[in-house]
Length: 255
Image (cartoon, rainbow, N blue to C red; front, side, top):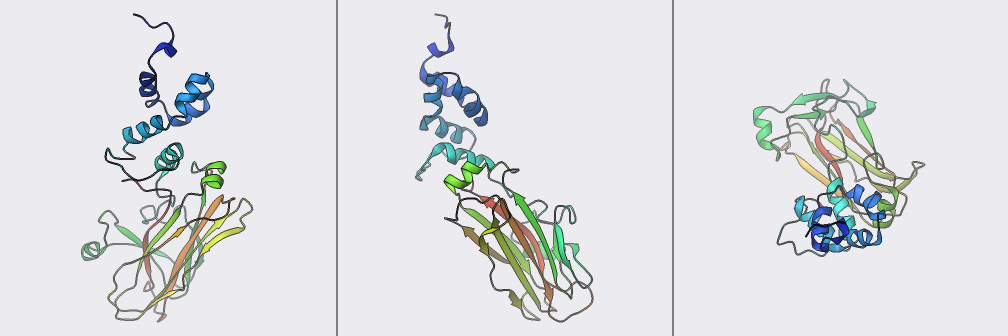
């Protein structure tokens, strides 16, 4: 028998149709059509199906989720919020706050160096000089898709990572500072570990530094990331710490 009204379809069929509709359209448009659609769009089942369909969870997923709708949006937005983290575009997107000595430089990993770095997709790094070199980037959360209510009510974990290494022939000092900022750019949270000093003739291995911001106050609208350093022997050229593959991610990672 022909169906004269889409609402005459079984609810399970309607749910399946909704899994193919973009999430924001479901909330902004479809949810306002009628009470039936509103109730179906609010069902946990729909958002679990959408997560499964888009690969955000696996069939055997057994981890607890407090709010599947929020979980879906955090998964869909999850990516590195720092632009040009591996110097593929030179210094594009970075502010060179301090550019001492022979200034910042971009270098390619040599064949042997690529074997030492844990991610073979990373081909380049930034390198500092004999006077302090610092560069920074500001992440505008709203511009990246994280609306105010999501950040203030959910306050998802914010994970920061950076990679740095010294040269084997010269000592160096690496530093990092990350701040969560309000709309007025007032700090609401800070991660600033003690500078890492690496002695001359070290193993020059790549080291990862990471931090997760949790339970921070509401009002976070920006994230400021700054790193760099200096060589400790004041040699002309680029003998300071090397940095690459920096990242800022929000919410649960993909499985």
